[in-house]
Amino acid sequence: MHNPLALLSPELLVALQKHGFTIFVRQSYPRGRDHFDTDIKEIFLITHYDDLKAAEEHMAHIAADHRKHLYQISIPEDREKLMIAAAQPDGYKVYVALLKDKKWKGAAKLQPKLKTYLQQNTSWKVKDGAIAADLYLHYGELMLKLVNPSGEITLPLSDIEKH
Image (cartoon, rainbow, N blue to C red; front, side, top):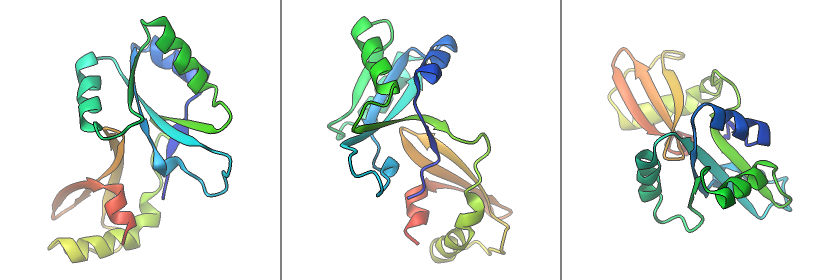
């Protein structure tokens, strides 16, 4: 599975706080697993919010995730736990809901799978390179927004990776 997200660091956590992000949602993140990492026990994704209501909606969306947790910087214990997570303790990987690169470059590699998916699931007439794909996160899930002259589709990245 493609994982374009950055690892959380103490410096990044401080920068997020300086930009007004004081609420954080933790969830399981299996996409972050690398088969070479044999000593990793758990992999998490931390999503930052400046609004408690939005964070609570995220928590409701991932209700089945037994590793979910809501952190608030205003609570000293939560701040301390987030700093520990940002330090990437042994046995853990903690990603942040930010792309490693400002501009996602994975669309070119996905073109054959995108073409197959669209041929099987839509009436789009697809020519090579005619699909614009933007990647974004929605409640911790990587989503694709596909655009071509025929229209626009939004779907989980995992749906394309299966093809």
